[in-house]
Image (cartoon, rainbow, N blue to C red; front, side):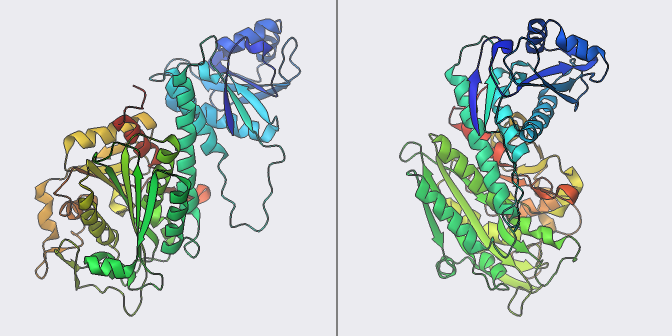
Length: 500
């Protein structure tokens, strides 16, 4: 979709559809009032008939409004004017985008962008408009034999800025919005693919393809033999039960100064998790194709950064495998040796994510990172604690944790910090190895992070548990693409390209 900045008198804008907002109690926004005046009170007369009150979620499509240059006029209900915030704005934009795509105007102009929601300046409003529009129009139909395409999909959306000048900041907001939305769409596509298509080898191929598209990105794939030589016994133990070979995907983006310390993103890439010998219940097991959403979010974030050509050095590491039951699979009670030399007693083979992550986190040391963030659908306990609204955050560095939290708040991709106290470490004690891979029933999200923390002592590290936020179940089943917005905002802020 193309996004263009528009200014001038709303009534004089020539377009297939002009979008204006109406607050509750039929209170016209400024652009709507201008159109109403030009049409000699046509909007006021229509609203007085009582069919449209301006409540959130309402819409009304009008044709041939007198003394205007638009073919159609779309009224969007905004809800109460008092307390109108960014969340209410996003909902209005999402409704607008879906309606425009179904109304077949091909191009339209939205005046909702001149609204001033709480904590939303023009830069942020423009960026959120692009991201929300793209996410609303996202469809996954790659695996369907017959697809009914939209006959006349929306192709151009004008973003009205009133009398304000078309500044570089406004153009940057659109550019960032498109890049973030593209990264989210890539992560969703990869995650929504079935496990028999999106295997570790497929994921590696997608990373290679990304590397070929950017002159600043280099992709390498470590095969099982190379991982064996590195001593990655924890990671390789997980793939033993699968016919699909494990891959360690390494993506190196060099946009910053030579020699400057990179940020490292490590994403769990379990392309299907049946639980291994500790097999999962059959109900909803199909959703375990989403166990690679952490890895997908790393690829999505890397793609966004490459598109924006961010002036930062960034490393993406995705350990990828399947976790299936087999005669050679991990067994409860097995002991494996990680790349760090620490031994692990596997008490539950379904706690495999931390096994592939710990070797990847040890590998990250060689980059001498400025910071490391790992992203994983790691624990069901995180869903119990935080539901589907916030990702779990644990960190060994307060400053880094605050950066991540702030990026989540700004991007509406929020996280909530949980404690990483030494008090929890004893739950991982083992009689036979340096540690167990589970810590009992209590504080499952925290003890999983405690496990990972034993491999991150040499750098600043944050862990995002996205088990509750990476996908939706039920009628709206599908990947969300989170936390690509959070991670991209974090990186934009790190290199000084984010708004206040």
